[in-house]
Structure formats: structure tokens, C-alpha cells
Length: 243
Ligand code: URA
Image (cartoon, rainbow, N blue to C red; front, side):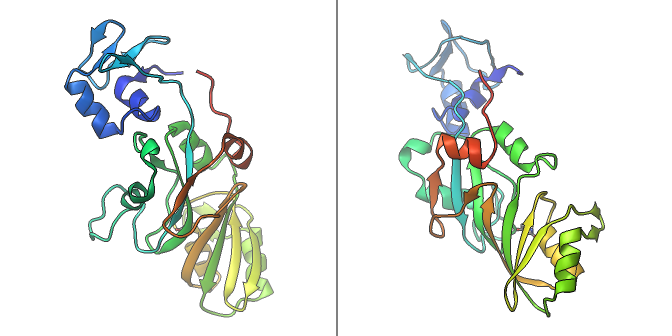
């Protein structure tokens, strides 16, 4: 495994959020072994003792994952040029104090007008695992569409559709109501659900993500909860790497 950097290790371990970690390091509050270090990118040799304000901190890698219910209108990005807010603003507003120190990464993205399950984690390797096209973790969406849904269209979705960036993998597609389609994908390209449904003549008017792997959305809109280690292991098929 590549060596860790001081700033990244502090925020991954939940000691400081990334900006706070940088400020604390610049201010000379952090030491590696016996030496005060003022560079955020200082490498951390394995097994070294890190202190903040003279107190030893535990930098053991611990994968944390949050299930967040994304509301409509906010972007999955750290800044919103339209000023309507980001998922990070909304998450910070509901996060318990004990979880504020982590550097949170969104696991993939949902469009501004898409609602539903968005995962956050402190572990870049979990992001890579869940979003990798090779992992094939199912993501279940429910779409409200315009147009008539028929068996032919569902069969095309199930077989896979050729989009401008290549053929899609076969999907699970089912009718949930006269204009409601359930679509489960095992890949995650940009705007993929809207593009697939658009391609079969069913433009999407509303989109919601219900589940990622075995994690089913179970918190009210705008709220988040921490997943258990078992949910991460079994629901996301992810075993954190050993230090
Ligand atoms: N597919 C889309 O088209 N939009 C999303 O937000 C997620 C998947």
C-alpha cells in the first residue's frame, strides 16, 4: 500500500476535517514521532506515533460509510454555481458532532434533480470499489416516465441498450405502475438511467435511487445514518484493507 500523508491520515481517521487538519499542521500542533511537522503532505512511516497538541492520536484505518437520503435540488459536488446547495452542505447540517472530523467523499453521484440513496465514506478505496465498472454492484432506481411502457421496451432495457458511449450491460427492468419503471443497473455511467429510458422512448420526469448493493434507503429525506461494519462488508461486498 502507498505511504499515507499526514493530512489525509488525520481526516480519514476522523481527527480533523481536511481543512482543519491543514490549519492544525501549519500551526505546529501536530508531531510525527518527536518532530513537529508543518507540511500537510509529510509521509507517515508505518507504526509511527502521531500527536496533536502533545496527545497521541489513533490513526488506524477504519472505514466509515454513511447512507444519506439526498433531497431534490442539491448537487453532488463541493460547490454549486447556482447557489442552491450541495450534498456536502446538507450532510454537514445533520451529521453528529463525533462524525464531523472525517474527510467525507461522495460515493458516485446523483443528478441535481435525482433523490435517494447517496453513500459517503472516508475511504477512497471504498469509493473506487463501489464505482468501479468491474465490481457490478447493483444500483436500484425508480423512475417516473412519460410515454407508454410496454413489454418490448422493458425487454430492450433488460437486454442492454447501445448508447453513444457503448452498449450497456443487461439490466433488471420491471413495471411498478402505469408510468413507473424500476431499473437496476450493475454499472454507473453518467446519466445512465435517463439515457437508457430516453433511448426506448420513455423520458424520465422523476428519478429516485432506492438501493446500492444490499443497502436499502431507510432514512427520511435529508437525513443520514452510519452503516455498521457488517453492512459495509456484506451489503457493499467491501473488506477494508488491513493496515
Ligand atoms: N442515472 C441518471 O440518469 N441520473 C442519476 O442521477 C443517476 C443515475
